[in-house]
Structures are given as structure tokens and as C-alpha cells.
Image 1 (cartoon, rainbow, N blue to C red):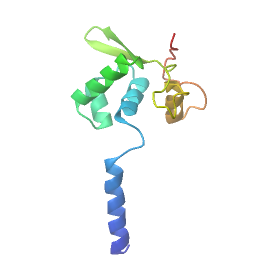
Image 2: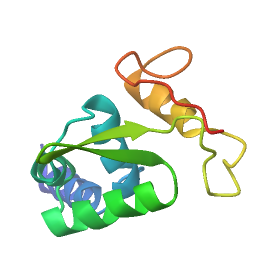
Image 3: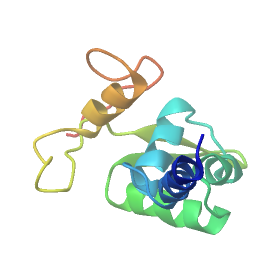
Length: 120
């Protein structure tokens, strides 16, 4: 590999580390969908953010009705409300469950490890 190609590859890798197609909110949502009993510490480690940021994001998802939080002893359990509509105008006709299904590789409906909960 010549020096130009190596430099270009290094710039590409550096650029890839600066942004992602999904927001941290989407990453947190995926963690909760995958494991309803997940700890904030584990969410933070998986997403690459601080526990404080994970807590803030999860609290926002709860406040907006995308996630339900239920206390079980000293731990929390979460449930994704997959019938909740997406917020952005470009995708507001889609539900959160649609996004999770696509990202999990599920061909139809919510992923197998997500308990469906439709908005009432």
C-alpha cells in the first residue's frame, strides 16, 4: 500500500470514529430492547458514553413515552413502547418498532426479544 492510500485509510478511520448513522438515543433504545434488565453502566459501556449521559438519554426516552421504566427491587426493568411514532418529520409515519425490527434484522414486526407494547 502506498503512502497516499495509507493516509486516506487513516483519515477514513478517523472520520468513522467521529460520527455514526444512529444517535446515542437510538443506541440506548437498542440496548433496552435487547435486554430489558440492562444496567446503566452496561448501556454506557456499549454506547461509548458516560453513565450520566446514559441516564439522561434513558430518562428522556421515558419522559417522551418511548420506554417504560418499572422498579424491581433495587433494579429497573425497561420496556420499549414499539408502537410509538418516530419524532422526525422525515420518518414520523414509522414506529419505533419498525426501526428496531430493521436494526435487529427481523423481517416483520418487532424483534423476537422485544415485548411488543402498543401505544394506547
